[in-house]
Length: 346
Image 1 (spheres, rainbow, N blue to C red):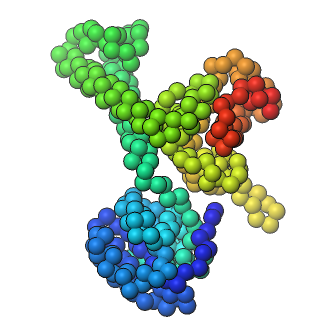
Image 2 (image 1 turned 90 degrees about the vertical axis):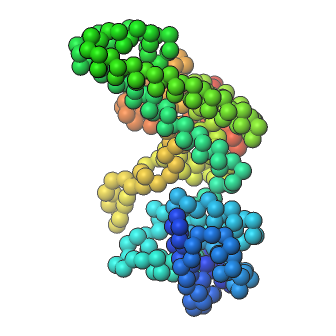
Image 3 (image 1 turned 60 degrees about the vertical axis):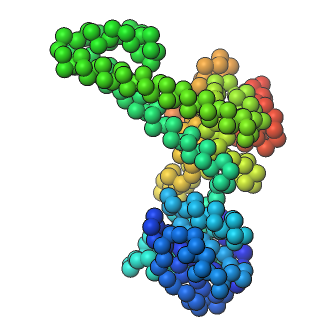
């Protein structure tokens, strides 16, 4: 957990919503200088803080609508602090809770150096990252539709198609297996939507690949050097990490990627683990998928077998994933491709 500790003359806490925002400004002594609820419009906010622009810092909780506020502060030259939602217990655990109280608490946490900091993703690559995340929706819908076609075969006690339906050439004549007209129409609808999603996903992946090569081709090709990592996994890791220098140590990177389990201890007694939901779920998925795909390589599979004999099946996969995460950190930090011999020997 990191905190924002830089002192300022004015501290602005904002309880941010989609259409309104409650603004609270306090000084160094904690005196409330302004409290007001305004619409979420940049011109309204600019007029409101005009009298307090001298050494002002702005902070808001990490909710879905923080993008415009961060961009506004960057354009106006105002420091912006994004609060980590899962760490801001002083707000979520209050007895009384409303917009006025939340805005004041955000400003107070900022003033006292207790504001837990979340990463403010730069606007230049933010839209591409969000588009890459949005790609998961049509991909999952396509998988659900193909699974429904297979389940329909089981419902009617018919043998499932021998060839994989993910390929368009294997879908011809599948609907004709059913004698009932309604069931046949159901399968036809599923396959028609799948065909349309194939086109959408293919065009989207081509656009994302070209955009990635324009924004950071070097890191993209470095990640492609990992055995089993294709374009999608390489782009996912690249955009979720963005700048590897923002992680001071490899341990910070492993924690952010959810590759470690944090222990919960008190008075020398351990009561399990905690913090499993804190970190980047998309980065965790990408590195875990990459670790599974690496097992196709014979030498990596031998390493996995040794780990399984030593730690057991479940823990062995976690050890391999953590090992790969550390390798990715040093690859991006040192700008060197993946070295399989060094990976197996370490």
